[in-house]
Image 1 (tube, rainbow, N blue to C red):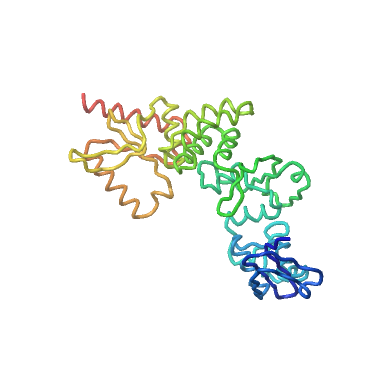
Image 2 (spheres, helix red, strand yellow):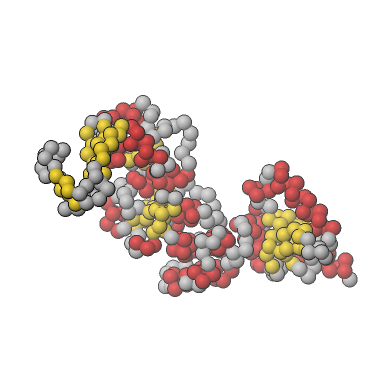
Length: 355
C-alpha cells in the first residue's frame, strides 16, 4: 500500500507520523513491528489543546465534537469545557473555543451552521450572497443552508435561524469563500432574482457586477439557467435593468425610482471636468443636458467627518461650475414619487435659467 500519512491519538498527546516519500506498510501491532522502505519518518508530539487551537484558528474559532474527540478530548472533557464556560455551543456539536467574551461574528455563525450539518452543507440564497459580499438584500438573521435530498431529510436542526433547503448540486456549483462552502456567484444571483422583488433583485445584480463577481457575458447566460422556473419572467426583466456602474444598493434604488418616474438618468458615475480637464467631481446619477447630478448619500460611505468635508468641497466645485446637486438618502427611496419629482423640478429650473 502507499502511505499518505498516519496519525494516532492517545490520551493528551497526539503522535503524528508524516512521510517524505517512498512505499511502506504498517503490519499489525503498530507501533511495534512496522516496516517502511525508502521513507524518511518524522515523529512530532503535539499537545491536544494546541491541536484544537490550530484547528479552531482555521475555522473562525470553532471546533466540532468529532474533531475534538479525534484530537484526544473525551466526551466528558468536552462537556466540562462547556459547563465551565470555556467553550460555547454555537450549533449542534459545534463549539466556539474562546467562550462568550464577545458575540460571534456573522460568518462564524454561518460556519457553525454548516459544520453542524456535515461536509455536504453549503450556504445558499441570501447567505451565499452575504459570504460573497454581494449587497442589496435586507439584513436578516436566517442562515440558508443547502443539502442533497436524503441528507436534508435526515438532518436535525434545532436552531430556528437555520433554514434548510433540499437541493441537488453539481460539484462545480459550490465553491469555498474564505473557507466556507457556498454556491458560486452566478448561481447565487440567479436563485436570488427568482425569489426577490425588483428593487432587491436589481440591487443584487448591480452589486455582483460592480464587484467583478459577474461579467456581462456571464449575466447573459442566466436566462438559460432559470428557464421554466417560477419567477423567471420577472427575473429576465431585472437582468435587463442591471448596471454594474452602481456602487451601492442606494444608488440602484435611486436610479429605479427615477426610471419609474420617467426621469431616468442618462449616465451613472458622471465625471465633471473644467476647461483644463481637471476633475471637479463624479456624480452618482447624471443628467448632462440640464447639468443636474443626484448623489446617493449612504450612511456608511458618507458618515465620517472626512467624508462629509470631502463631499462639501466637491459639491462647491460642481455648483460653481454650473451644476445642480441633489442629495438623496435611503428614506427618500421609500417614497415612490419624491425622488423623480425633485429631479424633475431641478431639470425644469435649470432649463428656465438658460432660457
